[in-house]
Each structure stands twice: as C-alpha cells, then as structure tokens.
Amino acid sequence: MNKQYLIISICFLITNFINAQDQNINFTNSKLDKVVLKEMQIDTLVWYFEDFKESIVIDSSWQKLLSNQQLFKHQQDLYANENYIETVDYELSTDTLKHRLSLLNAKTPLDISYSKDLESVIQYYLKREKEKTEKLMRLSQYYFPMFESVFDKYNIPLEIKHLALVESALNPRAKSWVGATGLWQFMYSTGKMYNLEVSSYVDERMDPVRSTEAAAKYLNHLYNIFEDWDLVLAAYNSGPGNVNKAIRRSGGQKDYWSIRPYLPRETAGYVPSFLAMLYIFEYADAHDFQPQSSPMPYLATDTIQTKNLIKLEQVAEITNTDIEFLKFLNPSYKLGIIPYEPEKNYTLRLPYKVAGLFVANEDKFYDYAQKDIAASEETLPQYYKVSDKIRYRVKRGDYLGKIASRYGVRVSEIRRWNGMRNNRINIGDRLTIYPRKANYTQSPKRKIKNDKKDHQLSKNQKIYVVKPGDSLWSISKKFEGLSVEDLKKINNINNTTLKPGMTLKLKS
Image 1: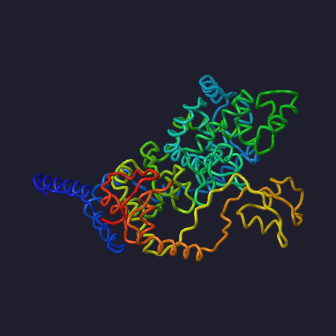
Image 2: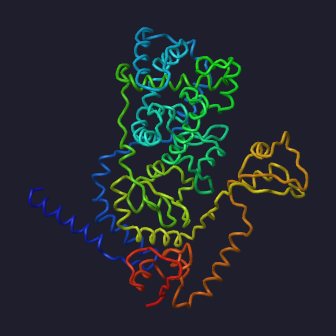
Image 3: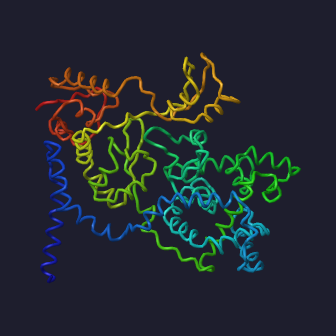
C-alpha cells in the first residue's frame, strides 16, 4: 500500500466516523435496530477501537487471573494455618532480613519489627509461594493505584493497601464461608454501616471504589479506638472486641506481638502474612520476582452514571468490548444488569476510550438496549431494594428454613439477628430480618396484565405530564411505537433533562 493511498484511506475512515456520530439514526423495529447498529460497528466502531484492542491484550491467562477463586481460598488457608512455619528451608539470611525490616519500619507508621515468626512466614512465601505471589503482583498493578488514591484522601498509611492481598487475593467477587464479600471482605451488617447496598441486582461490597472508600472509613474508625495501626489490622480481621479481650488477657499490653498469643488463631497468622506481603512487594526485585504486566491500569478506565436500565452484554455488543472484561470492570452487578432508579447513582465502568464513545451515543445505546430486551421477550427480575430491616410475624406452617429461603438469607443469620439459641419458633413470634431478595405479592403474569391495561387506557393520549422520577425512556415505554428520539424531535428538546409538571407532546 503506497503512502498516498494510505492517507486517503485514513481520511475516508475519519470522515465516515464523524458522519456516523452526527447521523440521526431512526430505529423503526428491533430487527432493523440490530442490523443498523452492527453495520455501524463494521463501518466505524471496529476501526475506532483497533488501537484500544491492540494496546490492552486481554489474553486468556489474564482473564483466568481476574476471577481466580482458588487463589483467594489458598491465600486464606495460609494465614489460618500456622503449621507451614516449621517446614521452611531458609534462603534469606536473618541479618539481611533484619536490616531490610528496619529500613521498612523507618518509613511507615506500622511497627515492622523483626520476630522469628515473621521471618518464618517471609521465608515460606519466598520458598513455596513465588508463582502465586507473582500473580498477585500482576493484579496489584491494576488495583494499587486506586487504593493509594483513596487511602491518601482518608490519611490511611498507603502500605495498608497490601491488606487486600490477604483479605481477598485482589478478587472483587471473593466470598468467604461466613459471607464476607469483596476486595475488603465486608460482612453484610458492616457493609450496611458504611452504606454499601446489597440487593437482588447489586452488591456494592464487590464494587472496588465504593468498598475501598468504606474500608478506609472503617480503618479510620478502628484507629480512633486503638491508636495503633498493627492493632487496627488485627481488629479488621477479628473485630475490635477480640482485640480488647486479648489486651486484657495480656495484662494490658497494647502492641500486636505482645497480645498475639491471645488472639484467635486466624488473626495470629493474619498480620504476619500482611507484613510478609509488604516486605516481599517492597523487595520483589531483590528476590527475582518477575510478574507479567497488567493489560491496563485502573486509572485508564472511567465511569458513566447510567440513566436507564442496560445489560452488560448489550454494552459489550454495542462497543465491541469483551464481555468477561466488562464483568470484571463492573463486578458489583450480580446478574450482569445495571438497574435504574431515579434516586440512585448507578455507574458503568469502561475503558477510557470506550467511555467516550458511550457518552457520545448514549440515547441511541439505551434505545437499542430496550428494544433488544423487548424483541427477546425476556422477563427481567423485578428490581428490589433491600430495606434496613423488616419485622416478620410467624404464621402456621412456618419454620426457619422456609422463612430464610423466602428472604434469601441463612437460618444462622435469622438466629443471630434475633438472639435465638435454637431453631424453635412459635406462631405469632416477631422476627427481625434483613432480606436480600424480593417477597413478591403478585405473580409476574398478573403484573404484565396490569401493564397492558394501563397501556390501553393511555394509548390515545396526545400529551403527557411529567411525573417525579420520569425519564424520556420510561415515558417512551408507556406508549407503543414511541422512542426517546421521537419524543425529543416532537418536543424540540436536545437533552434528556425533565422536570415534574412539564407537558410533552406524544404526537406531532
């Protein structure tokens, strides 16, 4: 290909892309929608993302690493079981380790002092855990810049970013056997304390940014209690109550290594594992760790506040982005669906270049998404927001397992919430429950029938008065054959901002 032909081709592609952005594409039916959109992808969008796809090679090994539950389980087993300490063949001299730990201690508010137990854990990681630690190092390239940004905002020592290594092995979907969830392993009740939503669609404990913000606030809360970061780490794992008990049993000692023998076994191995990770990440080059590079940093992504319901697989199709990568970027959406509620701020995280394209074509994308759902005749689960709590009255035929299943919780949780020593309940008892799923009062078929009735009553309307919570999309769904673009054109409006009381024409 000669240079002149190459320049002409590039100019043609750029012109084609700009024209596609400016073109007002009218979607008349769902089949045509898909054809038009796919043609637009072939002509312009695939070319637009060519550099993006080449620059962040999402290879199979990276994909597996993003959601490696085995790595998380293995990491938890390590600090819960101290037997490995006695099986280590030392390869790092004690004098060298002491010197390096003293250098680390001088530049952090944590107490990183030498102990025989810490040395054993470090030696074990160096000898037996090199491959798995390199995987964690690769993941850390993606998450650590974001952790540091949040911790700096809340005046948390930046070294505490390594806490997520032993908490979750940097897996945002990690879930422990007791229900602790996400990068920072929040229990349901603790997450609620820090406004992390858990519902049928969403679990914000899995949202990297929001859960990190919550972790920073919780760490600050613990520091205000103990005024010692090592004790904060112990309290983060086992709870402040267990740390206070250990302080009492130690005769009032307030440093971690003095109270360690009195802590739960898991916590006794937890802080040394954290310190070992901190040391190894700091001296990775000295020990010849060679992790692969992360395909992209967290800071190369951007968030968009969504304005309507949309599915991740639709975003993947529209933007020509790998669906598994989108799920990794948006782990808090449990069903791969971003719900819509006027009072909530749900966001979609995308690679930076993709985010720009999405914003530029937002209304068309939502219109396509809704018509795609309608064409597939898919019945989406009803959005259900978990309330703070409900009071349930026990009825004839009830038992704890039945009630737990109804609200998507565990029997053990109901017992804990209500201070119960066994599973015995009586008719008329009142139970406090924090539900996780909807308790439907009518069947989906009945609801669909009602929706059709509402439509029949309103299809001949010529105007519509905007109500609180309305959007162009929600209004268009009330009237067959009326799209967001139709509403904007008929009413000569250029944006999607509506105010209650506004009058919209439904026919030109």
